[in-house]
Image 1 (tube, rainbow, N blue to C red):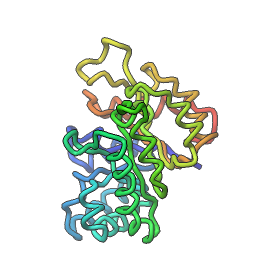
Image 2 (cartoon, one colour):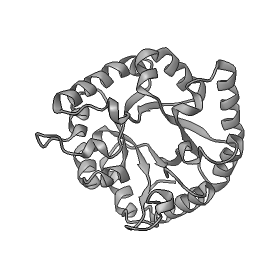
Image 3 (spheres, helix red, strand yellow):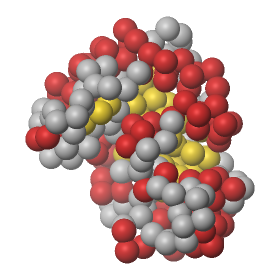
Image 4 (cartoon, one colour):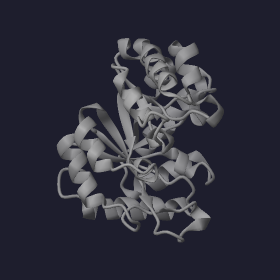
Length: 259
């Protein structure tokens, strides 16, 4: 049975972590997703304290985001963090603009580089892959898309951010249908109607924007391997409102076993 999770990045500007975790548990979340800023620089005792906070709230952290630098230069560190926090899968989520390839060859090489960096993670028993934004769906000079080259590298999972696919100008249903066997998790986020929610960078609570999440959730359950559906909002003015509204709406929109 899949579950709704919550990307803690959404609450990075909110109150203390223990209060956030308590709020999420009360809202009905079973799990959360971490990001590098929360744990990549923590020592063993701090990681244990973090795990204790999760346990106290009754939450699990099956997935987490890690910088390419940590995964590539210190995979043992990434593995230790993942084990301490109870993760099942690690995803590299982003490249700064100056670090992004500019041509087909560069994106092909990045895919190979990611697969190589993930080899020790996989060997340790974890899933490993890439988490997209919009830039992977912007056509290159030859008309191909960066995401195509990342997936072509081979042994990589994909945590698909569905709304970023849409913002990138692509059709998420098409990508789910063609590459669902690579999707092991998905970000559930919504886009506000044009001209609205400027103070929240144009994002919306799930179920209140332009994304057809009833259809998308059905497609993900049917055509992908997604085991975790992760709520995210990049800049909510009220993270508690976003968390509660989104899980309530997503449950109403769900027709299957997501809970």
